[in-house]
Image (cartoon, rainbow, N blue to C red; front, top):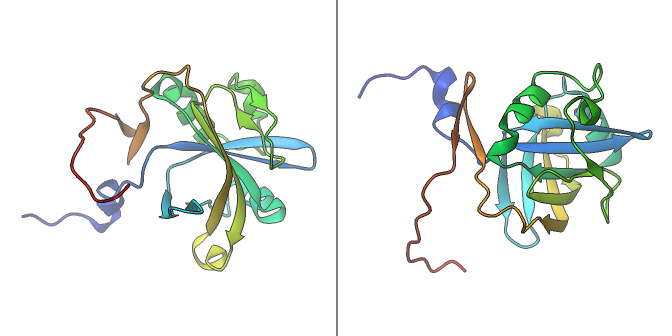
Length: 176
């Protein structure tokens, strides 16, 4: 074993697929790229999301207490990176990156039609926002686009490096 820089630990503990988080505030929809999130409960589904206070979406999420987590397939990889490399303060991202906002059923934030899954969420816990920018959201409604067969997700490993889902393993488990 050799020592690893502590700043690179996050590359080893990758939380899941890179997702897009949408918000809507004062009649304006925005979308940001998010790779720091994790499931914290099965039912109801709860997801912990880190949204930097420097992100334009932070203020909207804090004020409206709702969002959509849209899960893109690898075919959207370049758009996902481009969305993450600019701010909604300066850019109307849906228009700039050719994404189609679709009305959600339970929240004001839009779904993204090009993503294979969309999760409508409300913030249920903000106790760690001040310290860690961590919001816990509950999934109120989930949508799947079954026409996108076997979508592969993008996983961020830091410094511009991503991997794509690979082979699926089916192992015996007592979990349902």
